[in-house]
Image 1 (spheres, rainbow, N blue to C red):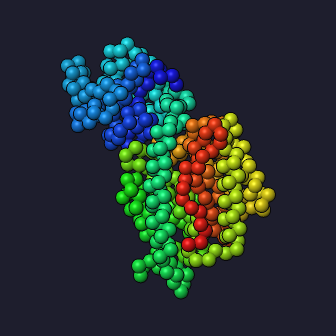
Image 2 (cartoon, rainbow, N blue to C red):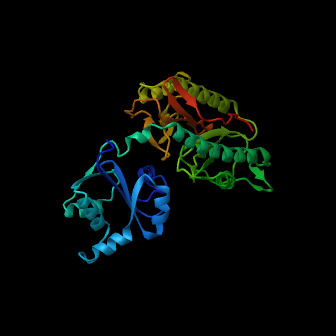
Image 3 (cartoon, helix red, strand yellow):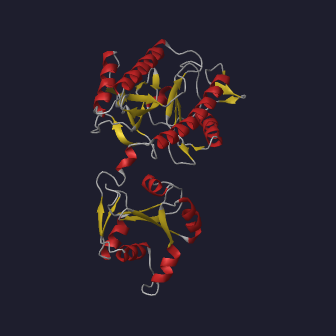
Length: 376
C-alpha cells in the first residue's frame, strides 16, 4: 500500500498489531486512526488525549468526546460511524481502505453514510514484514526476555530431585508443568516481558506441538520448553524453544535430538534472499526422510514432522513470511523469521529447537544466544 492511500483502522493497540504500528503506543480501548494524503490522525477519548499527543507526535490528535458534543447539534446519538464519516467528509474523502479484520458492522454503518469501505489486499502495512535495524533490536530485546525465562526454567529443572517413581521434585513438592511455567513467566515479567501461554510439555504431551503441558514432569524424558514473550515496552515478540531431559536421555531420544539439531543447521544454511520459503521447508522434510524419520498418520495421530519450519516474527508472534508446505512467500533481506524444526513420536517424545534469524543480503544471522543442551 502506498503511504498516500487513505486508510482507516478502528481497534485498540494492545491487541491489534496494525494499530500499534500506526501510532507507536499502547491504548487499551478501541479508538480511531485514519490517514489522509499521508497524514495520520488519531481520535481518542479525553482520558487518552494528553498522553497520545505526547507520545504520538507524528499524528494529529483530537478528542472523540469533543467531536461527539459538536455532532449532537445535528445527530441525536452520534457514534463512531457518525464521527468517522464527519471527519472524512470534512476532508472530502468518500473512499477508505481498511484492514481485513475491520468491524463488519461499522463498515455497514459507514456505507450508509455513503463512505466506500474497501479491504486492502496484502495488508495495510506490508512494510511490517521488513524490519529496520531498530526493529531488529526490539525483537532481540524481547528474545533476551525469553532467554531469561528459559534460563530460570532450566535452572529449576537442574535443581529438581528425581523421585523413586521418576517424577521430578522441586522444593519438596512435585514439579509440574504448571509450576515450571510459573517460574519461567515470573522471570519474564521481572525482565519487562509479558509471557504468552508458555509451553512446558513432557513425554507424550510434547508430541502435540501446541499442547501447553499439564501435571507432573518426569525424569529421563524430553521436555519441550517454548517461550514467546512480548515486550511490555515495545510490543515486539521474542520466540525460543529448547528440548531438555532432566536425567539421562534414551538413545532413541538422543538420535532424534541430534537429527533435529542438524535439520535446524540445514535450514539456516538455506535461508537467503530470493529463495522460496517452501524450498527451505522441503529441504528440512527431505532431510528427516533421508534419516529415517518419516511423517505418518498412525492410529489417527500425526507423527514425525508435521508443522512449518518457521514463521515471521515482529509485532505478532506469527506473521509473514511463513516457511511451510503451503507457503507462497519468497524470502528477502530485512525479514525476521523463526527456525524451528521438530520431530514427534509418542514412543520417544517430542523434540523441537527454535532460534530466530534476521535475513541479510548475505544470508541468515542468528539472533538467539541461548545454548542447546539436551541433558540437564
